[in-house]
Image (cartoon, rainbow, N blue to C red; front, side, top):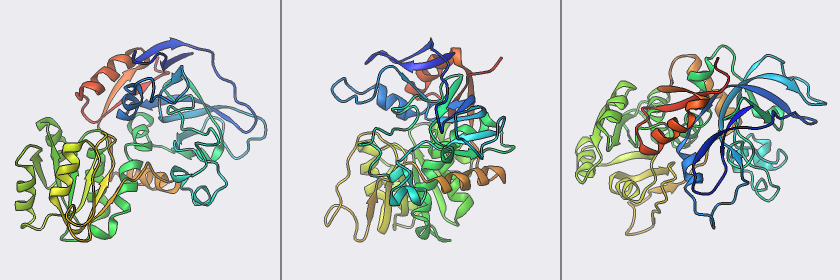
Length: 347
């Protein structure tokens, strides 16, 4: 089968032919109908050799949906031919966090060698993918796979971050979204769907700010040296009740600190490598800084329900698996509008 793999440090992704996997006991094989590209893939591929901790070659793709085509021994309750979304942050399945469906915060996964597909385990950027357990499959129903696949990360991650600050997003409050790319443009929609907050979107790209307006931002601000003053003006000098930084670089974290209100929240969602000190004389009184990770199984169901009712959608650029390297190049350059999606089994 064809797969998109990272095979050599510093070389980027390649389209290769590998053996089609067979499911073992308790496992499920999906024929992949769509796989999403993510900046996290490039974060991984840009790591120097001394920091890279994943197996090579690695089949990419931690956003995936597909149709069940083969079951391993002992699997019940999964429909052959059924369409499913993959819940990515796999955990041990037994601890307190996993028992709540919060496998994204499993404290034992790493030491047990359990890794998400595409971020350690073979991912969905291939014609077929193996799922370790049926609990990691969420029925897709009548949702379109290509339009939906990115919600498994680009929807679930902002949803988890935003709902954790939902009590701050009362009517009359302000939420700032920094970075209106693959995750941020979905984040704007989620805030609008579940709260009465005013949304101010910031980005360095005019095109991405146009997208922010299209998906519901009340105000857009170019992210330059005047951005903090502009946000303060739009909030009557008070600042934002919640700031969601979907970039995570040092300049955006500094901007987050400059625009957050007293007793506000800063949620660092992007993995741009910046750090933010907090405490007296650093952040406003009562301000909380948090770095949420991915989301829970039940939250993925809720995100798909929002998509089903038309409250949340993803702007998608579609590619064949043969064009996946080109798609990754565009992602690296920051020229993807919304989210790039590969369709591995497209005729």
